[in-house]
Amino acid sequence: MSHSVTPVGYLRSCFKEKFAIPRQPQLAPAARGVLELVAPFDRAEAVAGLEQVSHVWLLFLFHQALEDTPRLKVRPPRLGGNQSIGVFASRATHRPNGIGQSVVKLERVEPGRLWLSGIDLLDGTPVLDIKPYVPYADQVPEAFNRIAEAPPPQVALEWHEAALAQAHEHALRLGEPLVALIEQCLRQDPRPAYQVPEPERRYGVLLWDVQVRWHYPEPGRIRVLEVVPG
Ligand code: SAM
Image (cartoon, rainbow, N blue to C red; front, side, top):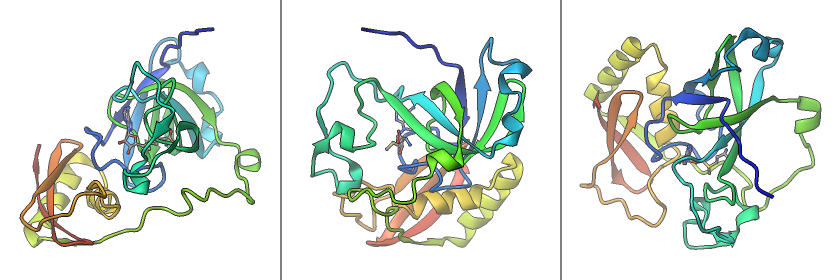
């Protein structure tokens, strides 16, 4: 059986590229975005009652990771990229139907628009459905996952003085918690685990419309070098 689905909306996200997006929602509370609903879901009726809900599940398409050939095993970045596990034991982006799910904070509701935070989704992500989080049913106190027991360990982060001033300036202009966003994302160390970070090597990512550049003076320590128009 095949079945076609149509997005109910598209996400406008702080993340303009896949690199440096947290591996799961809630890891960067300062990561914000707006879900723009499309017709007929852009009308007030479709979101009536949602103002009584703090978090929602988003079901979405990994539109920049779609593949024709199904994979049975994947190598999750969490395991260093060199260990493979079954596709159904992983939350990796390579999936049989390209469907992802994230529970995110609902900051504000208006007809046609949901303001979200704690997102782990790329700009332009097509959203297939939205469901309210139901604490009594969705929380499982005895749950465990021995592959993903805790959030990834964080690295130390420091700022070049000028970079911090630049970040504050852009934060004001954007009306976004940019300093917190940079710190929350980079502390999770977006670099692939197999790469040894040479101190001379520069890394960069586009957040909103600014390019953030950093390096590793030594393994386990990030120094933010500049935050400039992207
Ligand atoms: N919480 C979701 C889940 O469990 O289904 C996503 C988990 S997945 C490991 C998170 C990663 O997906 C992010 O770090 C980002 O690189 C990637 N990603 C986010 N949105 C995407 C999109 N629209 N297309 C492709 N990759 C995306």
